[in-house]
Figure 1 (cartoon, one colour):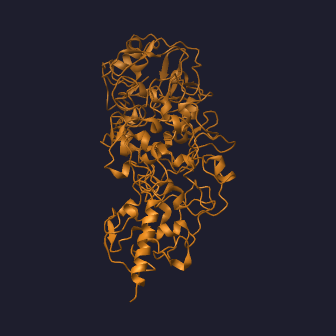
Figure 2 (cartoon, rainbow, N blue to C red):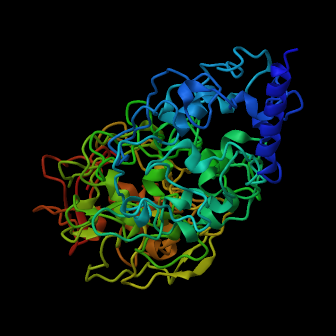
Figure 3 (cartoon, helix red, strand yellow):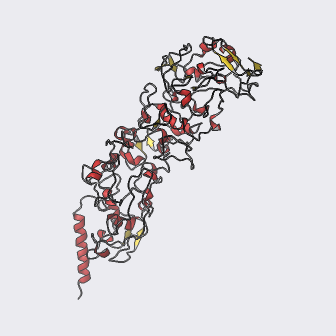
Length: 614
């Protein structure tokens, strides 16, 4: 009588039970492929361990007695413009990552064992558990040694080969990052909420923070994770809708999801930097008024649907490693103006020109020379100058409305630095304090809110600075009394202006103006509501500062015919550029051969406008 098959079966059963006895709690979980297991794919072998391990054989005698046929695929490793590692090697056959991929690259079916040949299986693996052979969309592993240091990595990772995980569960494997650095294939529910075989509870980003250190300070390259622990995305208690798996991380709140709110460690749609969205514009998942989080975040993307900053296209994309000055590549993504690792909700509005908390640690450009990079930007205008300063390739976009052509204009009229800079003849005080010696009798004591009431939180003393967003802002922004988001995301008014501002236009220079606004409404509903935010228009039409204001305004002429909104870079022999006087050449023309001129001392002009020679 031959007892050998029964003895082998008994030995297998004993080994399986011993292995299970050594692990407490909910152990194999979805890795239990036995008929009574919890996996979506099951086979005929009753021993839970046998699908991966064989007691007396395995692949080439490798530990841990591996039984699943190894994959022979070549993998495409992760890479990006900000990746500091030399690259990744192919996983060593029989080593930890290779064992995991023998099922999870999807090329070898579960149940293709060495000891028992092909085991019949039913069901299929979940789509998210199949990684494929293109690992560009998964966290890098099997790196080329030695590991390379970076400002956002914990110092011990490279120096000592140790992570910063206080529990000791997150470990380098042979000095490298492998699948088992983050995953324990034998215990599914260490993290009882995600059930992803993690080596430790990963709520609040604890698994990521074992290697990525937001508090590290080094010389040279800045830490891109700085201020993360106190940022809105690390602290927000908004509830997440976890049924929308593309845009959440498996936990209950934004703060608990932490890094996983925006990044996916495997199968990320946006391969570079493992973003949950297809690009670095994926903030729409939570900031478009949907139900992904509760309470809902401000609906920023509703503003873009008006006349907003244009999104990036396939030909002018954002990259985290791009130059600060966007030459020949102007675009606007959320991360051009916001650092998601440091951004905070603005609870109070500090005085200009300081940058707001929502733009913490963004890159900026000096307003002095237009090229010096500021990391981070200190003043709000410095971030705007990435695109609106010395960058080349700027273009006008018809969606933003009419653009005047000024008689005094630099070679690049879209470069606002000369208009606002210290050498400008006159300007609104954005880059520097007001330096004009002339009084401003129309200046209000405070800016006005969207409803026209005075706003004492925004005083308008003679030397006060103003922000770009005091004029270019959402038309329903919260800062000035609305319910919408702050900032130049979009507006129902042209040029992303916060309030209505009309530009007079003519069929030809000197010819009749086609859009007159005679005896205009001077309230917040009128054609010059934006000017009325800071200036008393009743003072203007009373001719307090210029004796001809009332006649021009009541005849229907816009402020834009004579005044440049930003500033005047330089003057000429006939037009000094004082008081922002810089005529629109699309509207006015020379009069009877005499050059266009303006004499402030006499309050007189020489020009042709509306078929009338001055």
